[in-house]
Length: 66
Image 1 (spheres, rainbow, N blue to C red):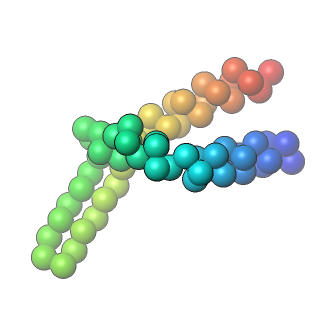
Image 2 (tube, rainbow, N blue to C red):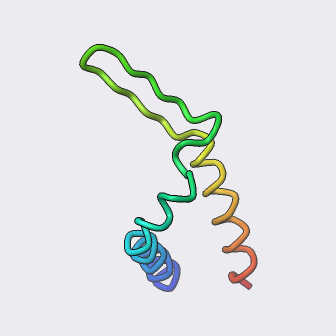
Image 3 (spheres, rainbow, N blue to C red):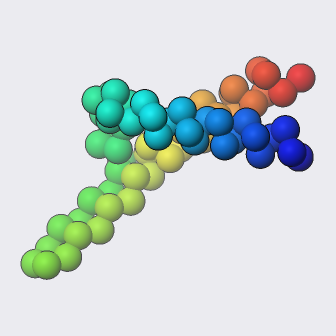
């Protein structure tokens, strides 16, 4: 469990440091992401982006987990 938490922390740190370059990939603006804008109100739910990140994370954990 400790090793998993350290890996997750390292991945979050790397994502935070690389965010200026990662934001240029278009993540967060994929088809299927929900964005609702109104007068003085904005709601954003990155559904497709979360599914894509989940699939990639699952593949990485399966690849490096064993």
